[in-house]
Length: 370
Image (cartoon, rainbow, N blue to C red; front, top):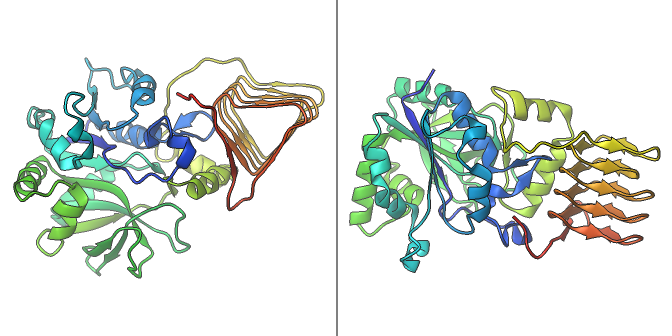
């Protein structure tokens, strides 16, 4: 069933401390989980929930984003049937890149105005989760809220950068701070906001007229005492992945079968760009334990507690432990990795050894990545 809800994946000024992993790509297209990109989780959640139109507000380094999303066919978002729209900043005006997301919403206001859908969900790309937005919309309507924010209780905290929120007994958000604030709360915002299209367009024009151009900071946080901003509590898995510590920790959590099943299949499947590869080949000397191995790999060495993306080659005598090796990586004979993150197409020569720690994994980066 199609929801009366249009999707926006907002890449404008996302919090990004991914260091080398986003040197040549945007945060949304950082590889994750063996075959996926970070944006796949939000995009798949929207599609599975019945959202018929999704706009991706691109910002910087979006070449890999365009390559990954294509026409949207892998998410069943063909333009003729429904719609995936990638809306880049103006290339003629370099000041565009420094402006806030409200300015970009205003520039593309025809996307909102021409749609017959009554509601909008605005999300970031770095929330690794699986959300049913139909339930969020149901609560939003029943509660009479102006804005509903998807939130999650994280008693142990999160290594990623996330806003903290304080909620009263009625479910209303009474206070919210950026990740660097000192708010005493275990509730974090998942940066997913449901509101009416009419209210969004009003907030865009009102805030810009006041010289303010950031959606959350200027349109929501400054109006918490005037607007009914309510929390929807997400019960499923969540990874706030916008720094290296969070990327490594949440990647390693995928090796737990309960986390993997919940994240990738509940309430719906996670989709990504299809790349046909042959099955992984395991040689006579291969020894693999507790690892995620994508298709197209060739393994003759030892792989333990690790994640290998498509096309990775582990030569005879090589050892990979507690590491993430992205697409087409090569580990030469008798080479070894421990607590490492290898970007795409990185080659470890024979006998070469790389070591990091679980707190500070070693990152190996190829100069040019897609």
